[in-house]
Image (tube, rainbow, N blue to C red; front, side, top):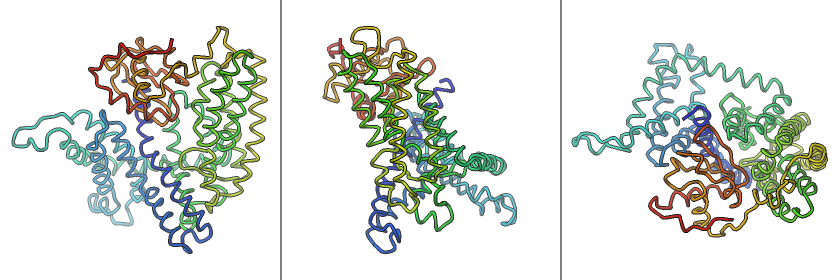
Length: 500
């Protein structure tokens, strides 16, 4: 597997622990709605909700170890997750200040401060990767009959625990330098203030085509470089009381996305519709309306972004620039709201009574402005440069490349259609999903029928290296991936109908 393909695999796995954040956001959001003043001090019910959500936020580091190990395992088995958990416990115990003091013979005061921060998401990711690799390599090993009970999957947590010992020894000397570098990076970005937030947002959008934005997000949204924007925001009053959050600052790596996802991209969708050929507008409208509603309510933007990402790269770069500007403006003005999933209406409502949500309603006004900016910019550029956005293609009926033509409403049938278009089971090495896209490893990419994939409803197809493919499906991705994995390899797909 090439480096890009492996990074894609890591980025996909990162979404497993991140997927727990909506639960934390909902629980804590409800708690803050009930008791926005005392944060659970005046209401036992509010305290229950806030503490329940806080349990997730406070343990994100170990969730990353478990989630990455599970997400990168070849068959998504619980043994890999258990190995990640065991590895995290062993490593963080061996690298705790007390253990370092004892093992290295240092006085407690001489132990570097870095070891007091060893329980973080960065270490969780490293442990998860190692646990997954050990699982993928040794989960089928058969031991001597005397030790047969520990064969296969049972062997992996044992091997992982032993692997953590040399890693801990290395980290005792390396971790202070790594930690210092990460902190310096975080401090540098934070020192740039709103400018740093804008730069981050720009690259966040640019990395979406290859699916590596999750890795970048981890730096700014979690405790990889000391920023930890999402957990600190969701912790609300607790984070304020502990000095981990700053009013009007914490959340600045999130807030500016709301105007883009709720308003800007729907404005772009309207521009694409208005610039489509009259005979194609009905078909384009069905695509754009669905994608715009998804972006507005949930913050899921990929179905809309993939509608112009590859056919009009100039528009996508402009989109990235405008996103950076939006995040910069929100951070500069200290207009703050946060999210547990994405920057849609649902998350805005849930975060609105969080003590750290400052002038969040101004993001709605900013969004209205960005709606018209996106509409004007997209319409001008499309017409001026004659970009072939959906509905403007030369060939008759070419809009069908993005429209769901003749696809089944039955998820199991639809999964079989996708599987057939991908070349069947014998062409697929691995099947996985990441919120909005199938992430696949193939034997032969030439056997994939991209036209049929798009006719079935795929918003886009992303090629990474020679054998890695991403198919953007929107919220259906997880369901379709699960259905595809459940289809027996021996099943004959020759009779499965496909769009013409």
